Every structure is written in structure tokens, then in C-alpha cells.
Image 1 (cartoon, one colour):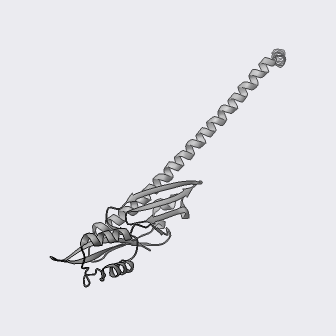
Image 2 (cartoon, rainbow, N blue to C red; image 1 turned 135 degrees about the vertical axis):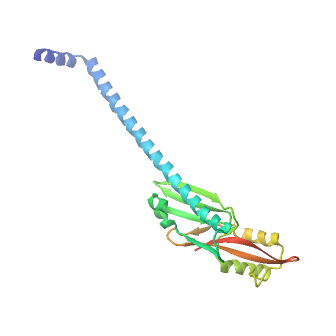
Image 3 (tube, helix red, strand yellow; image 1 turned 90 degrees about the vertical axis):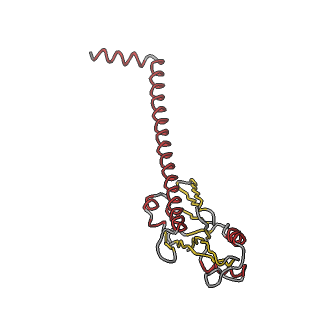
Length: 209
């Protein structure tokens, strides 16, 4: 038995083509393993990227929902107001973005931008209500400068609704960057207009820090 094994080894060692086949088979096996490992690595990386995008989409939807809820006036009492923090959101806390998340708000949408693993991610959600990316003081100041009154109940605007709405829409077009680790105020303010049929009012949601 032992002599047969030695004979086979000698036979193999003496046959160059057999060694070549053996080495080619080994190389092919190693190459296949490398390709499979690379494919699995790429697949895992792809899953992580998909998960990161889904987390960013969720955060954008969640913030939009908070703004829309304020605009819908679902709170009882006088002023409709709430505060929002990204750094207290569970999805944000488990996401890979951290301080690499940038929150941009305009009068029309929220735009989240983030970087992870040297890749850029983005999520945009339009608001369902009229939004202005500044506080009440800025709102009243802009109205007073443009219309001579600040639009409060005791100081209604003497202007056409469409004129006021167009003015505010243009005023809120520029994106404002908000900080993720600070409180974001979301507040609904009412603007009063004196018309031929008396005083009417409409609301805007203010988003600011």
C-alpha cells in the first residue's frame, strides 16, 4: 500500500501536465473564493447603503409630519407650537450619520443631506402647509416693512390676501440650515388682513432655531 502511494507521487511528480492541472485547479478555486468574498462584501455594503437611505427618508418624513401636524392645528388652546430634536429621535441615534447630517428647511420642503462611508445621501419632503424658515419677530418685521402693519389681530394688514401670500412665499424660498443637536421650534402664527368684508385670517408655520 505504501509503495503504491509513493509510486503515485512519483508518477504525479514526473508528469508536468498533471502538476499544471493541479496548480490551475488550485488557482481557480482561490480566484472563485476571492470573487465570492468580494461579491458578498459588495452585497453587505449595498444593504448598509440601502438601510442608511431608508433611515434618512424616515427622518425627513418624521420632521415633515411634525410640521404638517402643527399646520393642521391639531393642538388645543391658543398658539400651536411644538419643539423637535433630531438627536432625540431613535432612528437618528442608530443611524450612521451623526454630526454628518445637515438639515435644510425652506418655505416649501425639508431637505436632509448626509454622508456615510464617503457616500452622499439625500432626502427631500415637501410640506403640506405654508411654511416660513424664520421666527415670529422676523415675520412681523417683514410684514411691517412691506405693508405698514405687522399682521397681528390688533394691527391687521390692509392688503390683498394674494399679495401678502406671494410676498411671504418669496420671503421663504431660501434654504436655512438647522443644527441637528439643538431644539427646532415649530410654531403656527396667524396673520390678520382687513378687507372690505371685515377681518380675515390665515396661518403660516414658522420653523426656526
